[in-house]
Image (cartoon, rainbow, N blue to C red; front, side, top):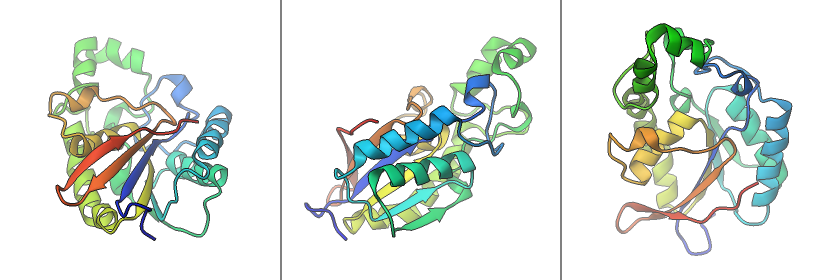
Length: 211
């Protein structure tokens, strides 16, 4: 079903607090659930969205914290009966040998500057892991192939994903440079809304409700 103005809408929400967010560790692809606070927050995000957006389809990652967020957001918003696609290509950045390691202790071991360069740089990789550039290289083709055609048809698409996979999308949606995109922040549970302008093949950020 197309939106009222015939233009596609993209709703992006970062997963709410996971059980590891409070521990200050690199999570990456480790499959941890939401915390109790995270579950309650996701429900509030959905409640704020209720009656504001008519969602046609949802996409999420293969990781449970994003899947739980999507489920609870949809419950809170009263969204049901839509297709949900789960795909690893919108997983969080893979942190390799740093996964499960405390961020402060990792900085002490490898050097604060080196860890900062990986976390807030575009090309540097953690040992055995992905750079933000690598993450973009899997997220953006998936978006172009599986999601943008639906936006071009005027549909409203909800994506529940992760800080770095959403940062990768922001690179395209906001035309951010390699230097700027690593500094783009989206908080746990924050909702971003973009309108797709088919004539110019561009995106306009709109004001979003917050839970």
